[in-house]
Image (cartoon, rainbow, N blue to C red; front, side):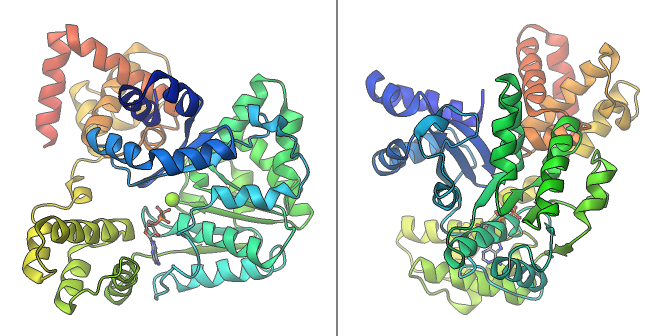
Length: 437
Ligand code: ADP
Ligand code: MG
C-alpha cells in the first residue's frame, strides 16, 4: 500500500461511494518528492475536477494522517503503456502540453533565488534551457536533499517549453521511468516504451540515483541515453550524489554521466537563505522583520526545504494566534527541535545497532542473499528505519543495498504483523529502539 493508498482509504470514509469511485478509485501514486505527492489520474477532466473540488478535503486527510506532505500534484496518465495511451493524442504536438502538466508551476527560474551556493548549477541549467543539445550534454546536477535539484530541473522544463515551441520535452522522475518500464515489460510493450523515451528532443530525469542497484532499468536507461546522445538530444539528470558516489551504478553509465557537465549545489549561505526567506514571504504578501529573518536563517542549517518549513511554521503561528510576526513569536514557533533535526537516528545507526544485536557486520545486512540469518535482521532494520527516520521506502531500499521499495514494504509489513503475536520480537524491537534514542 502506498502513502497515496492510505490517503485514499481516508478519503473513502469521507466521500460517498459513488464520488469515490468516480474520482479516486483510478488514481495512483506516481512518486513522492519531498513535501509533494505526485498522483496520476486517468484524464485531464479528472485532474481539473479533483483539483477544484477536493483539494481541501485531501489536505485535511493528509493532516489527519500526519503525513509530511504539503501539496499534491496531479499528472494525467500518459504513460507509454498506461491505459491513457489510447486517448488518440499520439501525435508529438501533445508532447510539450503533456510535460507542462508534469511540472510544478512554482518551480521556475523566476522563483529560484541565486546565490554563491547554486549559481554555477543555475547558470548551467539556464544555458541548457537556452540552447538544448548544444552546450552541455548531459547536464548532471547533484546536491543533498532539499537544495533545489527538482526545482532547477523543472525550471529547465518550463523554460524549454516557453522558449522553443514544438520541442519534444519529456520529464520523468526516475521512479516513473522504472515503473513504466516494468509495466511495459509485463505487457510486452517495450516497443512503445522505447519510442516514448527515445523519440524526444530533451529528456529530463530527476533523482537518477534511484536506479542504483536496478540493473535491468540501468540497462534500458543506458540504451535510451546512447540513442539520445548520438542524436545530439539534450539530457538533464539530477542526483543526490555525483556518479562516482552512487553505489550500484554500472560503470558504463557512471562514465557517460560525466561526459557533459557536472554541477553541484551547495547548502545556501546566510545571505542566500535570507534572500530565499524574503522571496517566500513576499509571495505570501508578508514582510519579515529583519531580526526574524536572521533568526530563521541562522536556525536552519542546510536545506532550503527546511527553511521553507520553518517559515511556514512561523507564519502559521502568527495567523493562529493573531499576533504580529516578531522575534519572540518566531522563537516560540521554532522552539524545540525542527522536524528534520530530529533525525539523530540514521539508517546507518540502525544498521549498526541491529547488526551488533545479531553478531553481524552492518555491511552484511546489505548483501544480496535469501539466507534467513541475514533477511530476518534486515527486515527488522528496515522496519526500524521506517519507524524511526523520515526516509522514504525507496531511500530505505537504497540504503539496504538497492532493494526495490516493494521489498521494503513487504519486510516492514511482515515485521509489523509478527510483532503482534511475538512478545520476543516486540521486546527486541523495544530494546533496539531504546538503544538508538
Ligand atoms: P531537492 O530536489 O534538491 O530535494 P527541491 O528542488 O524539491 O529540492 O527544493 C526544496 C524546496 O526548496 C522547494 O520548495 C524549492 O522551491 C525550494 N528551493 C530550493 N532552492 C531554492 C532557491 N535557490 N530559491 C528558491 N527556492 C528554492
Ligand atoms: Mg527532488
